[in-house]
Length: 228
Length: 155
Image (cartoon, chains in turn blue, orange):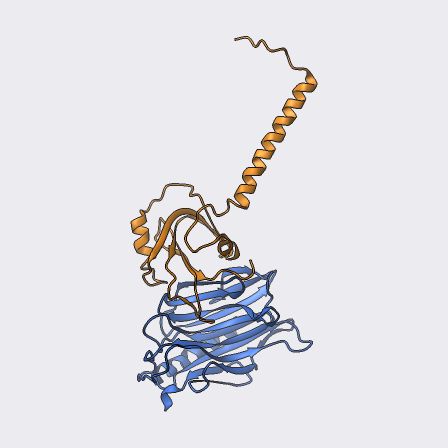
């Protein structure tokens, strides 16, 4: 697993550098004010009779092309969510939040709290992993466990990985068709780790955000507002 | 001075001893209960309710020593934290800070700040935060915890 992750981390870095280069030109699509919670990515549920998903893993580049201003954010995440408890979830990732800066973060939605800590340098690639075992959600970044949260009020069982964007008017400073690549995207069930092959989704405004994936470990989510 | 009281009988002595033991045990239990339950978070900060602290695995108690860093110095750190832009301090309190779900757990004295959460959103849901808690290590100046959120629906 370590060797496979290492090679895929290298792939992430290469893809990320290509992506950053293509996103150098700035644009501003003049979105409407407070376009909230635009998300794209992939998700997977166990399905009828399927075993509960107990882990989610991905590597992606820390890139901050999007926002300036106040009270908005953009970033990427991995998540275990529980469809049987109104979508309560355990999630982590990175973001550029105009209130707290460029940070790593974790969220326990069921218990209503969000934590941030010193974030990634722009352009660096990191791995994100949440595993539920032994009665707790274990939050890892770069294979280091930094939070353990009890699973007593929700159990996860489904996973989602994606990027999100909460912007206000004239805040877009990102590049044309900027893409964020997720590599080594995997989920864990009772049979072990598996590459994604999940269902892609776009939530919020499908005119501005897109996602593409394949049946293996790589998918991309991007902003296409500047294309027009 | 000689004790003029009549000597206690053996059974009475045992009774007094037993009552004494019961009393000590009861007092100890009360202290423990007060610490574990209502007294877990004797330090109160604006916007940050006991249920918020309990749900997020945080406890703020009485500090075990005097602060090696002044409140002014800690405030400067808390309001210009690398993991958080400047914020308005609602209240600062020197406390013993415990975060049970951190790895490794946090268990030390610290400066605890309740900051103005106005405009802070939970990124994935865009729900406005109702509190912003920041803990500062009084020796190193490190931000031990930067947490915001809402009253938990389920404790």
